[in-house]
Image (cartoon, rainbow, N blue to C red; front, side, top):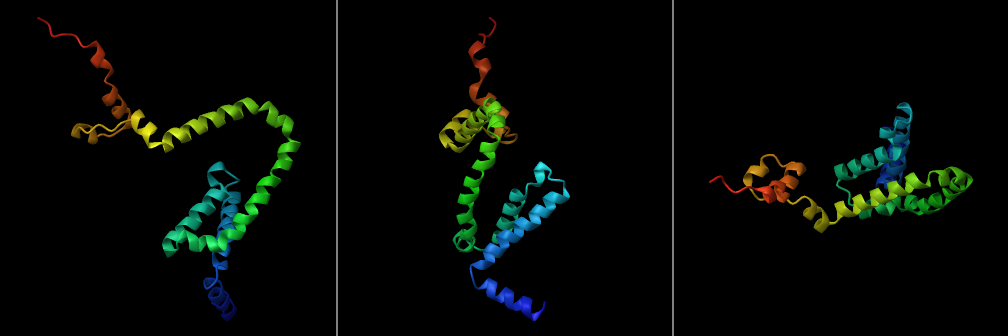
Length: 161
């Protein structure tokens, strides 16, 4: 490592700018990975950079408040970037209006899924975990649902006489 690079590292590691550089560097690397895979949806640069930054934070033992102290500039710029998305939306409003029904269906389904999965009372009543040890050996949600509802119990016949 050259003296200039080392002095830059010493300076960045003692200031919150380190986490801004880590965040932007992770995105640049993730964008190149996405480009190498021809922008495949599974190589989303935002997803890759979030995972990379999370792994760096976990690996270095850095708390989120310390990270956010350096990355708050990026957080500040997200507001204007979100507002800037309104321009292409307005320019393509005809396409958006033609797709309004599928978008609304996706929005409702996604919202209901998020609410049900986030609410402990709703999700635990949908698939309660039986306490029987035989169900713990193969704890699939389908078996939990069948075990809790017992649809065959309502049509039990009395034993033959």
